[in-house]
Image 1: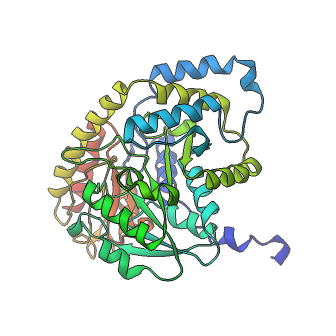
Image 2: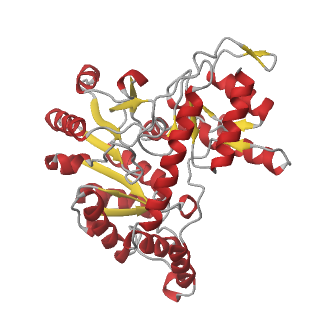
Length: 399
């Protein structure tokens, strides 16, 4: 192939999202008539609440929404997001500090592109969501992974952060509740990390998309709320996808200092312009409505969480740390690796996931994509019967 027909280096270096790849493969098998149970998708299995859908239906008939609107988001939605943030986490921002984007992933892209220059190092605790390192590298940043384990609750400490910082460190990615581990940092640890970042003069990109999905004694804490001095060095990403079961609507947002939000808005104005107006109208209904449906979903996830946790730990060779938030379990399969399963010697979580899908038609996401070899992510955002049946199949295969 001639150089003129080659991919750019930045695109050639991007790896496929392992979560979307597994989900696509499972859906293809299901479409072909296979009885597939999927633990791969990172989305609630509930329909979007009806009042949100009705708001979208009304918006589709409004002529003003048939045309371009401001690139940064509908003014009324930006204002509502500011009010919602104060209500839900205690974070005070103005509407001008809110940029509405095409989902949380787009908001993260805008965030990294706005503060990272080529060669800047970004501290990324692992396990991490599969898109964080790719987005950092697209911005020219250098990913510095900080491995954590179940023994520490998959939480990074200030001492570990301090050992990893260099003169080139520009930012820290901080996520609680965590995808993929379900870890939730206690408020005292959130504050300690925030104060360390403040003393070091770092930026913090914090993803709060799972803020309402916390269980047991876990407590969601917003870093810039506990450390108000970090407000001018913190970019907060959120959206309607997980809280309101709106993954397909693609509405997220970034909040932060005015100058950074204004810069990110210029970037978005050239990349996508405004988010779908109908989807923004739906998001407006979501963030201004009550949280009754949210609590219903949270209670269902909590029940499934404990069911999955217990069933996984009953499988020989599998060890699962109790998830405290989001809707994922992140068990270790290291006690299984090296066995012959389905006539094949399995040496990695990736190979194990392939065998499990081929042999028993159950989809899990291997930990390699999350920076955690030997582990796998299983979502409990699926029906109780499918959850139990899927884990029964895995237990039977591994017994």
